[in-house]
Length: 312
Image 1 (cartoon, rainbow, N blue to C red):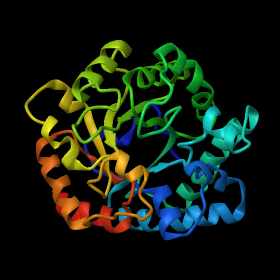
Image 2 (image 1 turned 135 degrees about the vertical axis):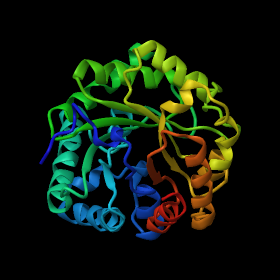
Image 3 (image 1 turned 90 degrees about the vertical axis):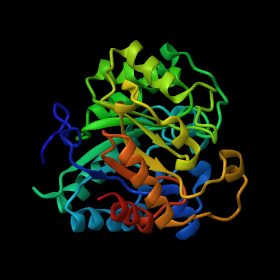
Image 4 (image 1 turned 30 degrees about the horizontal axis):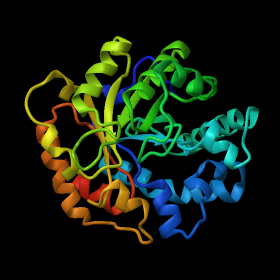
């Protein structure tokens, strides 16, 4: 299979899809119990890998039907030392599970990729703490040291890139970018925002992107927004500031509820897939670089298909 580290195909202007809400689908639709909301232990068993394949298959089929590229994410959002320790994964075990996640997805890619369906393998890195709020503040240097081992684990696999997903502060994002640069891995930074369009740290989204670019020499391949509803951040995506052109991907929540409301919800709010698609279409018209489309919490194939219908 091709290695894309030196030339990520999603930078060529073609549309790429991602999956939707992995953890919410497994918990609320499939009835799985994911301790600490962590999906990465599933790669350790044949039964777990089968469940992941069952999850990814509809999205891969959708990409093939629409003749679009696909970014295939490792289920490793929680595979860091803090969360891993709560699940009995420490040290070498964490490195092994990150590598095993890529090996599993490489097999999935071999079965599906062809010239009309480029598939990029993406090593996912989550925040040290909760993705909805800042519990432990890290300096950029501390974040580079903390997340460096996972990035190095991905470097030694067939992963084409790494992505920092649901970043709540610019300092942690900068540290991950530094660690990726040291490892020679392309990196994407995806920030989450509150209902006011600002990061949970309180920083404005545009300011965070500008600071990350300024501090890292614009090393991230691009930026994304995830784990927020479009109504939470549409108002800040206006004008012609250069940072807007750095946003290439969007993985929004199905629900317009706040992070605080979602954190205590006992039922899944899937929102309205068609309405979500229309929000995406509006954002595609605003953001000239927006080419990577997918979902986050509460979304499934229905949402991503509706996004395709509205945007393409």
